[in-house]
Length: 381
Image (cartoon, rainbow, N blue to C red):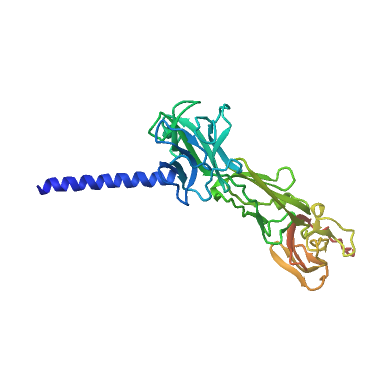
């Protein structure tokens, strides 16, 4: 006896789980719920139409008061039967405002239209099938009809042709937005310091996953990026001349709706370290790539660096020969001229500069040094 009771209890438990899981899935998939009832629809429901009976019935529009069966739908805020709403779908056509035969909405024999609608962010689709589930799990049965036109109406059990409708959220436009890092949207030509990063801050009312594509460009060929979803963009300042550029971000959602935002970014001229070489303090000066000094003699170097955009002077210089500092200066435009004795046959001279906007650069030249000419000395006989 206890064994049988246990089997019964277990069976009831399994059935309860089945019903719970299916009802949970049902409510998660469907936004729209409808039923035919013999009492007026609640305040939270919308009356779509009225009928004279559960089967073999005539229909009337909701403003009439002759029939006692109501097609009531709920599940959405502001659900209505207004055919003038932006979000509206025709359900049926009636032959008159009451005592009416019905026909499918895509026919044109009857002039009284029955609609399901909402002024909110929803769209509706209605169709006919012998089973609404064939159209999709989100479709709900409103009623059934006996034929395509000149038909009677009843509840969803009355006839094989079901009136099936579904509601879904109306797609909303994404909102393109981005910010700069650093926040002033300024970087320097030929430099990766700072790295100018454009950060994608776009949003979508339908959820960030609804953004399908992000597209970046700054109006220069070779400086574009297209990616799936949301992505940032690092401006390739190393190959951009100093100028102002219009950065543009376009985001496109899963429905193909797009939004675009633009912002000006500034690429400034960076400090450029450079110097010239000579064997004499007064010149002539030449490009150090072509220079050749003399061992154990002085070579002279003149700083010809260019300050960055907005700077006024070089405030520090450091000179190195083969990795060893031989001269440095700090202050308002320290002396740009220096010298060093060339000891080695091969010599690398490096100049590091910093201007008064704290922009820094270095440059190095490697050149040879020939042996000095022999010294002739006259010897008395």
